[in-house]
Amino acid sequence: MNTQPTAGATAAQVLHQVFGHARFRGAQADIVAHVVDGGDALVLMPTGGGKSLCYQLPALVRDGAGIVVSPLIALMQNQVDALGQLGVRAACINSTLDAEQVRSVEQALLAGDIDLLYVAPERLLMPRMLATLERSRIALFAIDEAHCVSQWGHDFRPEYMQLSILHERFPTVPRIALTATADPQTRGEIVRQLALDGARVFVSSFDRPNIRYAIEDKREPRRQLLRFLRERPGDAGIVYCMSRRKVDETAAWLNEQGLCALPYHAGMNAEKRTANQARFLREEGIIMVATIAFGMGIDKPDVRFVAHLDLPKSIESYYQETGRAGRDGAPADAWMLYGLGDVVQQRRMIEMSEGSSETYRRVSMNKLDALLGLCETAGCRRVLLLDYFGEGGVPCGNCDNCLAPPETWDASEAARKALSCIWRTGQRFGAMHLIDVLRGKDTERVRQWGHERLTVFGLGADLDEHTWRGVFRQLAALGCIRTDHEAWGALQLTETSRPILKGERSLHLRRNRPGATPAVSRRAPAEVSVADQALFERLKAWRSEQARQQGVPAYVIFHDRTLAAIAARRPESLDELADVDGVGVRKLERYGPALLDLLGSDPNMGSDPS
Image 1 (tube, rainbow, N blue to C red):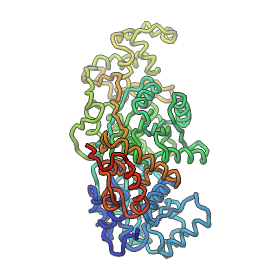
Image 2: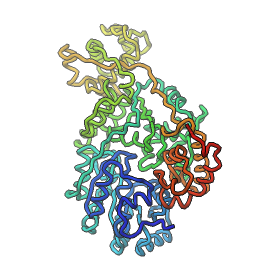
Image 3: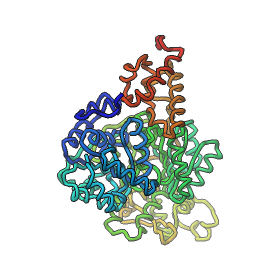
């Protein structure tokens, strides 16, 4: 059976024959048609929305090879593995290849034996690579994770700024830049840096309705995390931490609690880091505890949750990181803990960043303020998130605030007491000491400074410590107080606090309460009925064995949704199996007989599953 698309095949035919999909999703058809016709494009599409097809299809339809600029080795290898399963001639050039392997790939490219070639930006810019490309037939250039080009973006890569050379050296070759997240400022930077002024811009909805967003007040982080994980037994997910030390300690602690957790950060031995990533991709139910060094380009579709133990630096970072959950469209969770210490730490990192301009610090602070607004909102989190990217929305009914609307309260008097306490103690102390003073606690430190004699001592005894922590955190988020990092994190008043102190401005704050993100059973996609569950599990076991034998992630064999459809439809012939979404020509040829044998041995075959 011929697994390669025939010459002159349309994009729709290639979509069905190679990828096994009967139809395009969203704007895919328009994007593919535009690039096939030779047009440049900037594509903003959420993670899991099908960005890869937007350049893979045109590369297979147009004459020559598609050259894909990719920032991470893991992303390249994942894509090559998946395309290999489809019969697509894909390869990559990166630092894991020796000189002989690189020469072999280059020769295949020159001979026209490669459909898609993945390269890092550093490699692409080398004179040897550019010279090789000039001697090859090039169908298109795809610049993946294009937000890396922007100094305002969250994953800035200086090499991306030099990729305008593609327009200069290959003016007739279409270019498509793709990213899952970019605010209007970042979009403008992408267009300018890549010389995409004439490109058509495609902006899909940023909404990921299958993801449930939840943010909790940080009280006992480990206990809160463990509760969250216990409600999702067997789920694969990512836990993000700010520091390498916290990653190591959290992973070790989770293993002590009987969970399977692996650490990942840039300070680890490269071999160990690679091995942990491979286990996460290929095994089920692994929890990856990581810094933001992990994740960009990870294609694992069945990540059921992304948890943040520390505050990210912007809404773009948060959106990009949480977007790694639920790529398969099944229910997933984005869960975060957030406290005053996070505000202090992030602002300190911005203010003390070496070599950064005043403009960069100002933009970074504005981005942080927008994220703090997301954390403190009493309204729908999804509405605020989409509004940040210039997209309207209505309350989603699937975030913590929609499911359990938070209370708000008139905190004007409490805020005045908090601000007054900062002032009367000399603007020299952190929140915990100030709370002790307000609640009238007779501690050694309070007596050391004589603060028991202040008029504010005990003035806030009517509120508990948890409430006061929320007051100080929200005052910081609103910019009414700032942290003096040279004075050991002392809280100080800002000009914004003046009208509150004078009683000229009222203040309503959200009342945080201990809570839990509702657990949802996620043992299988929604398409799997109770009657089909046993067969679905048998199909997954078969897939796992295939993946183990081939040394590839299970999802590159078949996605859960494809197995769920097979379990529901129970095809009895290759023709019926070919009609299942996700079963292309090559996979039908390679796995069809084995699947039919497995289905034929199922005791329910031939019976009415209802």
